[in-house]
Amino acid sequence: MAAPAYWIRAKRALARRDAVLARIIREHPRIALEPRGEPFFTLARAIVGQQISVKAAASIWARVVALAPRMQPEQIVDAGDTRLLACGLSRRKAEYLAGLARHFSAGSLHVTAWPEMEDEAVIAELVRIRGIGRWTAEMFLMFNLLRPDVFPIDDLGLQRAICLNYFRGRSVSLRTMRRIAAVWAPWRSVATWYLWRSLDPIPVEY
Image 1 (cartoon, rainbow, N blue to C red):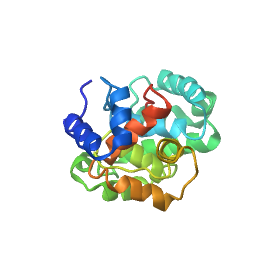
Image 2: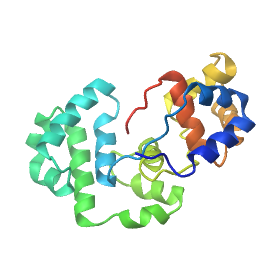
Image 3: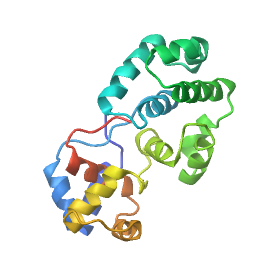
């Protein structure tokens, strides 16, 4: 899949402004953020992956997809709790996934309007859904809507990458991290993605 249209422009701007990012960008050529699937697919996958290892999430997700091969909301609603639990989901996650599916089936979300809505407006709508917090909503903005200026400050990987790359591993406050990130606007999604690469060269799917 093609990188977002703004990617090359953003890379150049960040490399000019920030020597640390310039080095990381040079070290990771020919890879870029790639768009993920449909909104329901992306959010369902995010719920499944919350607070468990990547390996465990992949295993459970494969069973969920086997249960609902086209990953349509109606398939998840029809599956029912027992079959969702049999995929390895916790009871709470099964409830979250079924709730998300009902929202999509009922048309109670402004899905078709999301591409035109402001970042914070999309986040506000998403966090009203049980099981979706701000971090998940920010991952959705970055990986599904391809928003260029998301700064997921609560992401532990991002915090670790800032401390390692800018402060030689020393812990610093969120306020200091925000100050470092101010120079990256309006390309904070791109800066975040490259900082993740400094920890793990292989992009994680959200």
